[in-house]
Length: 397
Image 1 (cartoon, rainbow, N blue to C red):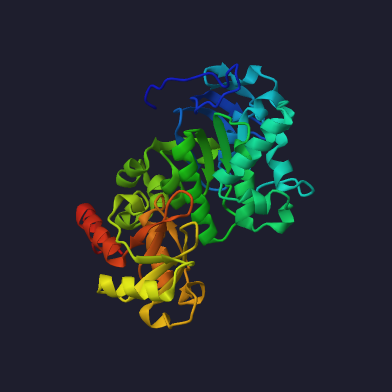
Image 2 (cartoon, rainbow, N blue to C red; image 1 turned 60 degrees about the horizontal axis):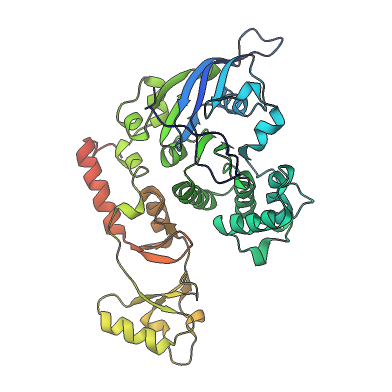
């Protein structure tokens, strides 16, 4: 069902970083005593190394049970599971779980541990020395966009929901496992934070190339994140297992079509990333510069009388109109704060939603939050027209 891939050992003798490995599930079944029907019935799938594979299906269909059998949080009744060619059912369960990252909804952080202590849990269990653990914690916090100097000693109750989820992902990746299991990890946060966390995961995956099995009930999330999607029915029956664009274009049956829903052209926006379309460049200045300098740059550019104020790390901070640039004001106080942002990894669907909130173009950021450009409403609307013409559904929205 999946293309041939080269697999590597689950870890290596030197403890060096490893990339994702292939997962194979063969005739995996889970039966609970007292129930006539199995919760999962003869589930067979290959998860290619370095891919994000998303399990999507209705509540109670068995998708979480199936995922949890991979790291044996739930023991299979029968069948075979291999990770990187190694029989997962022959390993000590605790050792297996230390080698497979696991991130869940609401992060699941230890409430009486600091951020540092939470991230350090698995490296500590693996016997890493203190300096290696400290270095790794700092590296992981930076990787997920949390400033160690600000957050390392905070407790979970002192973090927002989105920050807690970032710590949860950092903890899951701290020991550099080749496989990451994610059980609806972003389901308990607000839509804007959820979109940002999805973007962050895609950015991390671009750097790390892990094998990720991701469970969700949200088909739009599956389309955005998945290299492949497995649409599951009752007992984890695989209704369709394919790339997002193939499922959108050719749903296997009426049940899958129900997940896809109407409006294929707009759903195609979820397959397109911001970095794939043309961005414009705003007039910019950093907070340390003067309002006079910003005014000169806007005048020199001509056209729209707007500019974007950046902080000293180059991150978007405030939108300013020329009329906001009165002498004697500081740029850090001029104009209005930037609201919604999107990253280069964001989908055009995310960008469209941000534009509707912002009331126009939206600022785009790079991997570390630095300013990358501005995406205009006209660009996205032109892309929607192209997609409608391509799919012949101009009247379905």
